[in-house]
Length: 319
Image 1: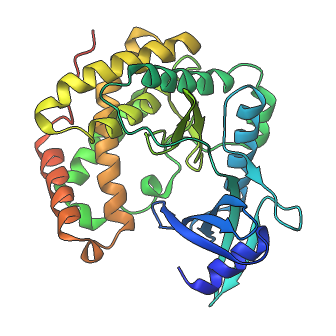
Image 2: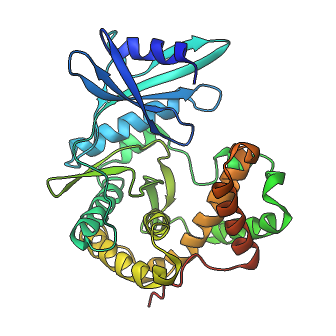
């Protein structure tokens, strides 16, 4: 990202001398701001060609709603002009800039043995789903969140880079998803990306952030996302045993806050495999493979081979 864009964005929210540290994000556009006055916060730059301002407003509004009902959420910050969303332009490009408090604590690094934190993770996820159902009808109507298949990955032409065999699998999954009921017991507002890098653990509590993908989807899919990304941290021979323990702890917490029928829970392995296909198609659509390092290309080639062969991400028996 151009330094001129970073300077403009930082100037909208900070004062005086500062430094920016890249934190990541899919587009490598999330930074930690550190000012000479001791201020620290997160700056996120969003290309207006890819992101709509209305969606950012929905994200910030929903985060405030969740925080107002007891969930610990990284808070949105206002600029010097009192705005939650600023705009900066450079070289014919427009960017939206938003800022959040630095979430206290640290990322969860021990996914294999810290069952208590995983259970609290599940409780937080269940609480989010419950808050999307109870007493939120007017807000949901006002916000007009998108449904699961409205993203360009579903509406645009399928990326040729993914290959025809993956395209066939993709169509099979979409057919199955389209046949699922969208009843309020199993379908509603979800975080849509709650993996272990999108929250911090602080004094035994969990502070959530990055709600940029929020929308309507199946609750079981939101659970599957957490499991899918956690499984990626464990070597192959131990994946199945880890996934079983992790799923048990996550669901133990989740079901304390939000009920989910056995029929939906049994669909979690299907949603885990769909997440794998979705992730590969997403990379194929938005990433230039020629710019990837050899390790990443090898990893994606393995994903593609497994998808084409119909190999599940992990064997997770749920009865």
